[in-house]
Length: 57
Image (tube, rainbow, N blue to C red; front, side, top):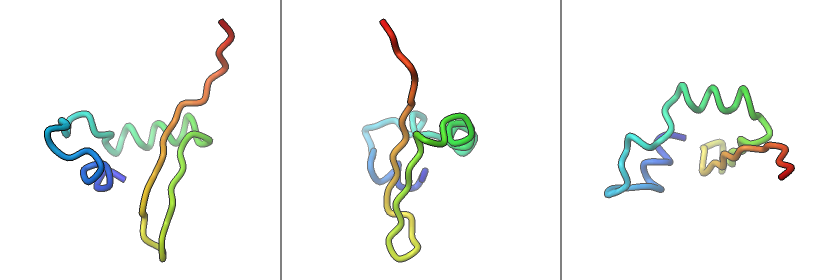
C-alpha cells in the first residue's frame, strides 16, 4: 500500500505524509471497516482508508 501511495502522490507531494507500516497496521486494527483493498490477479491494485465515527452535532 505504501508503494501505491508513492505512485498516487508523487512529488511535489511530500513523502513524509505517506502512511507508514505502523500507521497502516494501527488503522486497520482500530477501524477494520474503514480499510479496503482491491486485488487484480492476486496483486494489490488499490486501497481506500477512511475513518468511521459517530457524529452528533
